[in-house]
Image (cartoon, helix red, strand yellow):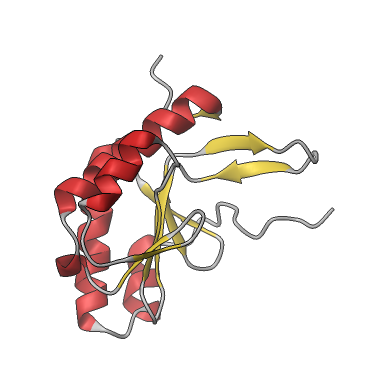
Length: 145
């Protein structure tokens, strides 16, 4: 079975943003996302894999037997868009998504060009709902003790 690339690396988050992100707007948005996700998750930002900034962690295991660890919330400041790893497919998330603003979505990622394109209050709802969903379905650092 293939080894997952999305593991905690120990790389410095600020150094990553300052060296990897060459667009000033995306850099500012990245630092703003760090503040927001840190507040919402109550977790410090950490690097996962070569380019994902994650908050908290949880353990997943699929029916296929594949298992691993992943951040509870995360994002990557990729060239085409900010990739947000924050979505859980729940009714509350779908309602908040309808109010989010300008974005694209795939099964597990939301893509935004810049934070000013979206409503931060809707993003907060999506993130809080995702934390709740992960806490209820996985062993995670976000679980209320």
